[in-house]
Image (cartoon, rainbow, N blue to C red; front, side, top):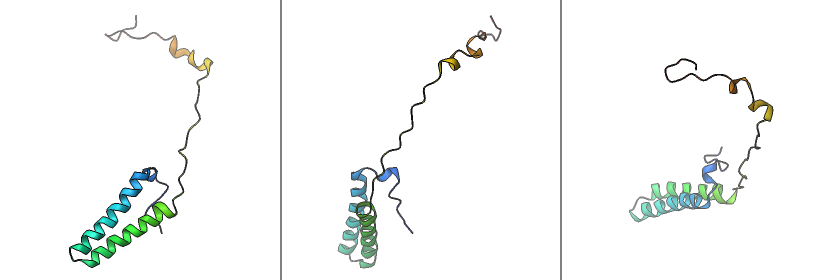
Length: 93
């Protein structure tokens, strides 16, 4: 079971992945310094897991591009182009 989906577009940028890992390990240091090793171990484990998923096993996917669709010339000259448009008072001119 993966807790982090490395294929999500939010993780494509390097600075985002670095920030996530740095915050987790930074918070672990804060917890150890303030004297609470239980939360320090949990934050360090989250940092280690995010480091493994976001850097060790990360395989970036190229952005998906959709083919450009060009309208046909025949479809542009349809019956809607010849219909009369109503004026401001709702009556056709």
